[in-house]
Length: 423
Image 1: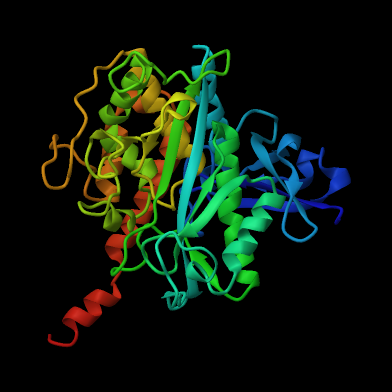
Image 2: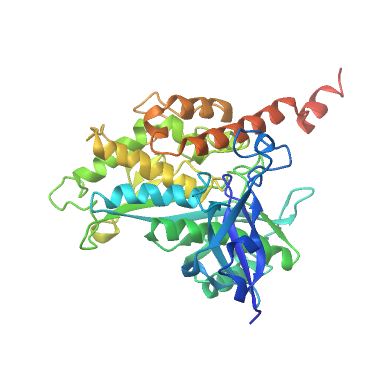
């Protein structure tokens, strides 16, 4: 095994950064000091008083969390880091720490957040141009050649198992070349760590085998989008699922009802974390089974918040709004925050949606129509933002506003094709 460790950390967009360091220097955080400017999609920095040009692009330290070190691709190892200022203070832009803070709020109530991610993505023949992988034997819930004739998906699953990412299963989805992986249900921070690493592993394995992948929300106009569904529950001090109530009509506790009510109360603002790109809103439309309406239902996939049919220790809440571009850490932090607010305020829960929500929705509330409007909703939601570090909200919203401004200024292929040929 190599004597090198990839020390990585997620930025506010959920993308991994880091450095490769010798194992014997893993305890030397200053050895891999990194500027705090690595937070955006490109080099168009967001200027803030404390994090960028106005502050001289100061250093931060990525301090390895030894409990996260695991085997990686080939003979390498990888581990996640917490972020600090050069003087040792916590870096307030650390998405892992933000999720940990939300989990601490729940622990103060004697409850442990538990989560499991379901991750969808496309296998590609090429990224430029974006071309789906040809799957002539495709079938829904296919395996082997019915999911991926190149065998890459099976290699990904095997590598993820060696890395301890605990993928419970992989299969094809409804659209040829789209696949899904379900990750193990476990404490929320570990679940988000594993989801972040899995997304990185998928890209690296696919590229090494001559194909590519994308977790884009909706990369193709003739296909459905790729979701990032988050399943959630809370464990009490004995380890029992606190969402269970055998005496309830639907077998779910008052705690779970308040939790769901909190998710619905913050529905519009949550889109800023769950649907964080311009493209996300091509997926978040009626008819996409994607979490458009502010509703909940019992084993109803047309609802944003779904309570699957399993009961007992498998009782859980599935949130279906997010897509594959969401930061697993910020998404989990936002959803558990919304649920916490609902529990603290004992918010009442409306009746569940019955049947087709797109045909006869029981609410007129739905996700905002664009990234810009979702950011507006987030900034207006003082109750949700109060649980987050103000610096994190400021920088996250600022980065996304700049992303939106680039989209507004862009001239697309569609516009050229639609208009240049006739005008």
